[in-house]
Length: 363
Ligand SMILES: *Cc1c(COP(=O)(O)O)cnc(C)c1O
Image 1 (cartoon, rainbow, N blue to C red):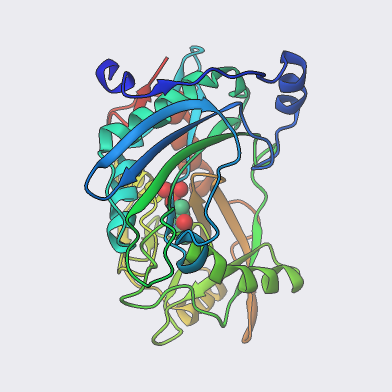
Image 2 (cartoon, helix red, strand yellow):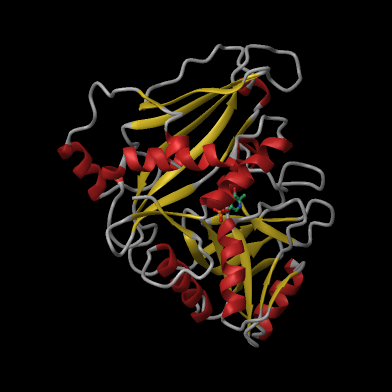
């Protein structure tokens, strides 16, 4: 690690936030609207590769108005968290999994891959530079946002020849103060991703396309939108930014398979492993909206939850669509959902053993 760290040139910060300003923000950070003092920046140029790695003040970036990202949306990102652990240390959760997924997204968007060690070191360096910005307390963390944009000034349609990789950070409070309330979701007529498309890549374009469906869900009084498959409009895929799990009365779990149209969540992957360890039968298989409704009505389906880095695990209580609505279980948080969430969070926080080596202590 130490050798990679030296690849970042440290730029001095002329005016870091005062302790008072920071304390006021950390007392009520919310999500995604406050940022730390620093950022990481690394440049890529065709023929030269990655160069000019810096960690310095978080400042606006200058872009030529013809920069490719502004026209053809060559942009990918990641979302991960740094936590204050039970012993006061700082840790990341499976950062190499984010690094690998970032490169998978890069390949799909015809962007250059970043050495995994450089990605992990960039995230680590920023979390340490801004360690005073990591909120303590249950459910709080420093949300880290690595991303890459095409910066070449060129309006022809082809992969750009210049890119910037950046990492910024934002203190995040507990999504839900005391126990996650169940959310209600709207079954969208829009599709998020089609076979052969970019559904498995974490790219901004997927999110741009999900904003109208999400706004429609909100306008109809729901919290989130769920997308069905593009071909048959029947198989459940995922929410706008979270994967889904279904829990049955025999203790088994189902989650949609990684068919290329859903995002391979790291939270999803961790929960699959934890559920199997608990002795639950877990199947990665297609599950239809009609079966979901029928199983909720018969009582065979007892819980549904969504999962992702930002909100960790969120119970789904009610589902509505063109064909009416239905309630899942009691409409509130269920036991298996709560237990799996507790298992995951205690590993992330360092208050439970970490047999998989998922937690990387950084300071
Ligand atoms: C990031 C993301 C997820 C969740 O992935 P995690 O690695 O668990 O945070 C799920 N769906 C979409 C569309 C996403 O962008």
